[in-house]
Structures are given as C-alpha cells and as structure tokens.
Length: 416
Picture: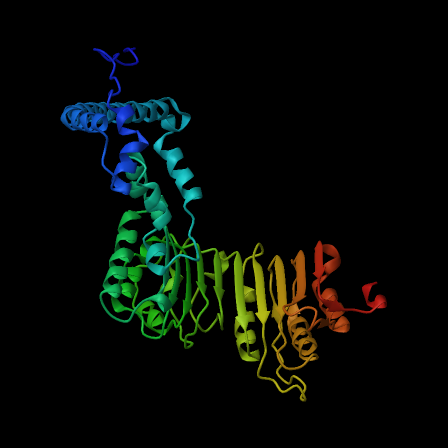
C-alpha cells in the first residue's frame, strides 16, 4: 500500500506582524471620528501602508497553494472512494450471483405498480431503474425475455392522438419484442375505439399468449379474432371481462393447453372451446338466458373440472315468480361454486338458486359451495327441498366430501 500522503515541505506559513496594528481599534476610531492621528500614529500608518501590499501578496500565494492542495486532496479522495466502492462490490455476494438468479430477483423487485402512469407501466419503469445500476444489471434487465413477458395495456388511459399515442404504441411494440419468444401474460382494457396499431400488435403475438385477460369494449377484438386460423399453442388461461355481442368464435378450438376460461356473459354462444380439457370455467350471468347458456356446457366438462357461476340477475320482476326453467343437466364436474348477487328482491336469490339446483345432477362432484355476493344485506334463502332432491339424484353420500354454505339463512332442522 502507498503512503497515506506526502508531508508538506518548507517552513510553515507565519502570520503577518501587521495583524496587531490592523486589529487596533484606534484605526477604526480615527476613521469614524474624523480626528487627526498623532505624529507617532501617522508614522505607524505610513509604515503599514508601505508593508501591507507585500503581506497581501504573501497571503494570496498561500491561499492559492492551499486551494491547490484542497483540490488535489479532493480529487485523490474521490479516486480512493470510487476504488473503495468497486472493491466492496467485487467481494460482495451479489457480485457472484448468476444472471439467472439476478433475473429472478428483478422479477420480485420490480412488480407492476397500479399507481404508475400508463406510460411508466408499459415501459416497466421499476425494471428500467434497476438496469441503471451497472452494465451487468442493464444487460440482464433488458435482455431477459421472461422479465418482459407480462404486459399491461389500459387504453382508457391512452390519449386520442399524437404525440403520446405514438409513444405508447412504440413502448408496447418494444415490450413485445423484448419478450423474445417467451409466453406472454396480457392484461388488456380496450375502449370503444381502440388503437388499430395497438390491436394489431396484440393480435400479432397471439401465438405467444399464455394468460390473457381482456376487459372493456371487446367487439373490435372479437371481430379480429374471428379471422385467426393459426390457433393458440401456448394459451392456458383466457378471460373476457368486457362487453361484446354474442357470436361464435372458432379460433379457440385449437388451443391444446387451454385449462381456464372466464367470461362476463354467455359461454356456449361466444366461442367454441375445447371443453373436455378445461379445468376451470368461470361465468358471470346477469340474465336467466345467459345463465342457461353457460350451464349448457357443463355436461361436456371433464371429471376434474371446477365450474363457477356468479349470478347477478337484474331483469326479473320481484313481484313475479321465476317462470324460466332449465332443462335437466347431468355434469361430471368435480367442484361447483355458485355466488348469487340479487339485484331487486330479497327472494330472488331463492328462485335462482332453486332453479339451478333443480335442474342439476352431479354424480361425481366432491365439492359444493354457495355464497352471497352482498352479505349481510342479501343473505341466501336456502331451497332445502330442492337441495335434498339434488342430493338424492346425485348420490352425494358416496362422493361429496366438502359442502361450504356461506351467507345462508337455514333452519336448524334443515341441517340434519
């Protein structure tokens, strides 16, 4: 190691002998009182005036030397500090982490933040901040496709025109490209007039879709999907949460990995699905006809599947009985979950639940769950006789292992 520093050479700087005279309050007094100095004081003043310039120059030279020494010391300190940080980083455990481990840490450290602006979310702002730490982190952050495999698109926060629109489209394209060939998770909200360019980018990577959730106004998307012929080889989860007009889609018939399907509307009339391979089906129905359409696919689901229906029936008069009856349905599903959100009448939930249970036969079900979406204001009225009929038809004693009844008004003797 080098010496800690060189010692100053030469004699030490000495204070000027003129200081005692310069600090004499008598000098200031002569100035403020406008009185005349004595003969001795006059001689001393003339002597000071003669010697002061030399002393001032001497002080200027010393100050300059000290400034140079300070600049040198500051620069040397900066070099040592920089090397200190580098050396600490070189021997730190994080320096030994592989790119794969760093990528996993980045994935956990840079989640999507809902409070961020749309442009920051689409650009993966937290991930870009991590990329600024060093060249290695920059390379890992920008060239690991898995870190760019989740893409949020909320067009309700997109401008209608340039320059912001073009920048967002560019960010969307960049995010898709940085994802390389990795499977994509998309969370997309579309407005009434979506950007054609953005929609083309989303559809253009459809062979990489893994988990997709479409919300908002979906009709332009549905129209575009109708023309797709190549299928969806990686798709495992598909959700339609927004508004659309019923109409059959055939594109999703070729989705060999599809396991989960969810929609806010009819299922059977929206698209042809590989029903025999689905493990989870979730539907939200606000009319009896939508509920009937959704339940019509139950017989085609496999024995290991879970069927979940959320009913928010709003268009039935609370003063009239429910006249719509469902045809008998026998389904081999493993789990059934029913959630009722009655809109107009406290008794409507009883009618709807009675209608659902009255048409079903579930010979292999091992889990049943009933709940209200507006507890405690709309607790479920329990259709005991209808449930006993379902239990008898389905032979629950032989296979039902879990019965979860929540938010239900049920008499004590009905528990037996």
